[in-house]
Length: 144
Image (cartoon, one colour):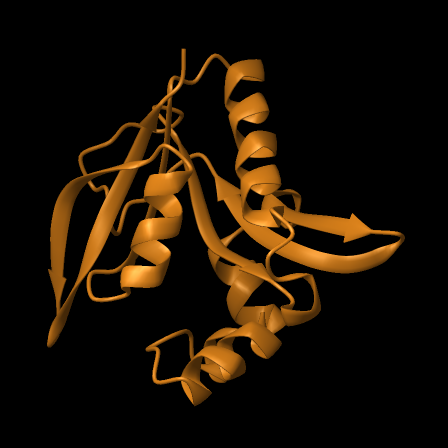
């Protein structure tokens, strides 16, 4: 995650701060079983956090109403190989296994590349969440 965050910051993207990506902070916000790692030929290639509640961006949602993807990232050497789609497919299968019918995520409102990526993966923007001097796009996918 730090590698991807640093890469993004070097390109002017407002991604996660390193101090928010420590094991203590991450585990403070998620359980170990919420961490998902995708491997290619035995090497860590991508990761995400998949949770079943998000009180910050979705405060009115009930627990287990949806799956919530956070910090989806792909190591640069695997860029362009379709790994975000594979991670989303995994999340969809987990939601189906739990009988959950929505998958949600958020990203910076002005981050057009990520917004376009999520749209290409069949997510739709359902809300704009103002925060500080900016805003987040809240995305949702209906799972049948």
